[in-house]
Image (tube, rainbow, N blue to C red):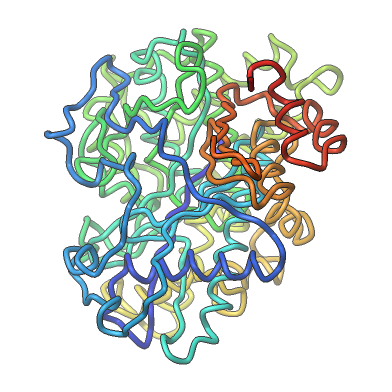
Length: 528
């Protein structure tokens, strides 16, 4: 599994600046940091991107695709491109001749790049929800490092980043998740099993939002940042007509063995517990579907149901099931929890002896969240993000007599997700123990530079660090080397996500200091 976080971006001294251009400055700032610290990075390899392939069995014609969907071509940021993105062409205006950097693959195996008008950190692949949380928080540290670096640029002015999903003016940007799923699981089973879960998952891991509707002009507060921006049940798009279930079939792995479930419905979370449960509970539901034991429930008009659940912070709103029952979002979540707990008990994966070491914790934290949301909301506000934010907002409303349409509450909403610890409200709460944390700063600092040891990300990140002058590009499923004195590039495929681990490759790295020797040992006869 892995995460993708698009950060909101703002230049306070240049409010009209083009966001795409600003995002490229973020990437460039981090590249300068890594190079000055003797860390390593390389460029992105687009060779195996297939963004127009649909999991339902067809591909969208390139001529019919929206330009936002063409993510398989290397973006070239020119003054014309900036101007077409509806902003001043700073590349021409300020005479900056530095090439606009759009992509980096980092030594921890992650990707940092410009996705449309936002800097995005895509975490390396991991095998469990605790690591998903850790390497996602490492991305927040990367974002903070760039903000610090850019704050000293007196000519350009500071650039601030926010881990949220909307600018409060109608624009939304994503926080995606990816899960490796066996190709043998029919996609229709995924749609049927996941839809009711996703409609109600926001109650546990929504990050909260001031304003109702896509433009946020409706007065009020809702549970999810993203819910109002979804308009379809199933579809390929991610920036328009957003669907609850995304059908992009781009496995970045052995295609006939795996599919990559691309989840676009989640909120960006600053709360560690909410973020952890987002990954952990979804993984358990995928196990239910794979085992054929997902709850047999179907929600009537799920898009509308998701909107209504998001708008009801009392959690009393009910949605209609196709069998005629009326249930709350919490009741839907309990159905999934009980099915997951039963499967875990039957299989032994949550047992103290012989368990997988993760399922028991996810189940325990999931059960605690559902119990607290149904009773002790003060306790839930210590880790359920939308409730923690609501408690802060209610404090301002009570103290200053503010109504929900007051712009000052919108500012608090934005400030909640500021990546700077001294400015971000959520981070300040966490620092004083009012918002539960699950990973310590030392582990986060290590994850900024070190790849996870138990996936192919180890090989990717370690190759970049060990042979920085010889890795010319990388992607999720390949690393491209250029050995000194050779005109031939050597692509090393990494299509099996659970190979290339530290256990499998550390010996090769230790034994071969020269890239030529390393490749010869790695590839053997295949290289000749």
